[in-house]
Length: 313
Image 1 (tube, rainbow, N blue to C red):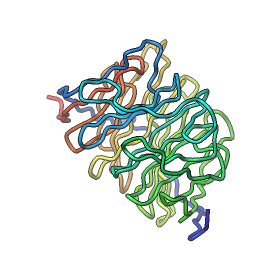
Image 2: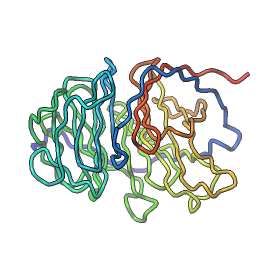
Image 3: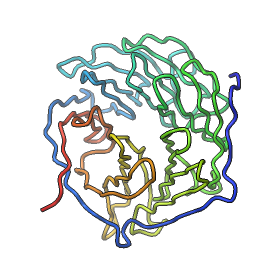
């Protein structure tokens, strides 16, 4: 990579912390109307990542065999590529592998064992590979030309072009991997001044404003940290909102707060409202302002819904 612009690290930052349950909690209802459902045929297959285009085309990563599938209108595999390994177009599947789609005519694939991002067109042709400085934990969209790469073993986030040119480094002030609870899993680049981080185990969401040198720490659960087995999925943007899907898989708790999405204003992190997620949903992303795609049913099914969010009566 070639360096174009270096980033910055917060100094003398203002830290605000609050728990959304301490007088803030406001619940709305999520109404879903199913449009389409696609299920992998074989019982031993498992979807670890997926995306759906604005034309409702469904793409899946099958962790059991390291394959990427493009599904047809009838829910069967139309195209496939990949395999288990470290060669071009292959993936190491002992750890998580993910797909990232930014709404253009290409998408990105990576796993937690190889320091690279593989770039494909929508017909599953491998176009090129982007070498990275370390293994990526998350690859998220900045715009239609750039990506944000959150590393697993480096205390920084790189903003890179689709070709791998480095635009900026972001050096988070928050703890970075000091313990299991302090492992970041997701990064959202909101604009040139604001970004958001979420943890793998800890039920905390961070919204950082570099311009104002402030950091908002939002506690997502009534539970103590040690009672959370797995905490946070990626925040999805919907208009001027961040929708953060919170999941805790510790089902032995009397009040597990199992699956819920908390919604924040994406420019200032103000908590807006929450809504419960149906039990079968494990991942989600917005296709448009009224359509949502979900991963369901033991990681073997993708469903598409029209949705609306309404105030409770």
